[in-house]
Structures are given as structure tokens and as C-alpha cells.
Image (cartoon, rainbow, N blue to C red; front, side):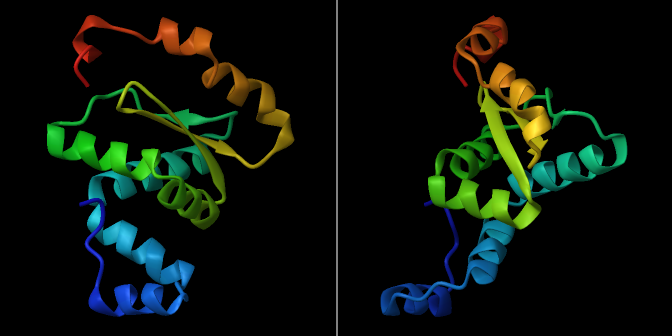
Length: 130
């Protein structure tokens, strides 16, 4: 299961109304490793500036890797995180998360990071089974 959905949030969804703030809070509590990583990268981007901030350290276990996969593979979760933090997210190799500002000036950097060339260059035998 991707998220630990409260009965109240489930009832809201069954009625057709899901408050995005409640959904984001569900993501935060359900996927704490992913939340903390993205939060830290957003803070790093704000402090350091530049085109993006990224993580290149593999998660400590499969549990944490699974949280990243669930957060970034779901369009709904990923979209909610992007709106909440005001960034674009990019993802490579089951752990390399990057945050980009919502600024057309970094479109080239975003395109380079998400290109097939960058994906190929970011391969390593230890990531074969991630």
C-alpha cells in the first residue's frame, strides 16, 4: 500500500472531495523518508540557489527506496508534492531525486537531467537491482 489513508480522508474521497492539504499531509506521514529528502532538497535549493539540488546517496534500505518509488512514480503524489513545494521533481535510478525551481531559465538544465543521455550516464552496476 502506498499511503496510510485515514478513514476521514477515505470518506472524503468517496464523496468526491479531497482537500489537497489533507492529501499532502497523508503523503508526509505515510512516506517520511521521501518527504524528508524532498524537503531537504528544497531547502538546499533555496539556500544554495542554482538550477537544481539533487540527492545522489542511495537510501539506507529497501523500505526507504520503496518510499521514493511510491512518491515519485504516482502522478497524484508527485504532482501534489510539486505544488506543495513549488518545484519540479525529477528522478533517476530509484534514488537520485532532484528539485528544480519553477523558472523557465532552468528548462535546459531540467531537460538535460531528464534526458535519456543523462539516464544512461547515471548507470552503475550497484543500481542494477534497484
